[in-house]
Length: 197
Image (cartoon, rainbow, N blue to C red; front, side):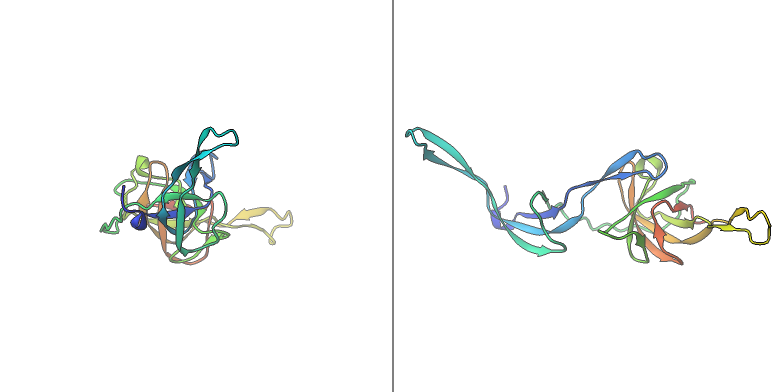
């Protein structure tokens, strides 16, 4: 085991399920990163005598030093060993086959709409052929408006429009994380994406 003072962990709040907007199938779980801690002293045990003089073992919990925080850490938040840093390079490119899907979540607490340079979760992953570096076009669903030129006042749907671009930077089996590169209007859960050409 590494030296206690050098063992670094990430602190995460409870994981929320990431559901496909159409099928409601759970694609994975996402825990929000809230900070970083270092192990100051590991868990140990001490031997004590109970009131009858019999030896009893008690657990002494580990102690951590909080190094940095992004948000408030609470009782019940989870600690995970920090993985080794991956410094990967990849070339932005369109997928070689057609891939379509939807935005599942906007990364960040209390954020409903993503703008440029924000991260979104999408409902396609490695199983669907997505790779790091794939660039996808974001499609905004056309609004439904009242046709004021017709006395019956029917609803008409405006055409779907390209809203921007995003690049996949992390893939899992059933979902991926993408960085919004450019956007005309905000990106929200349920918005679609397609190949950029």
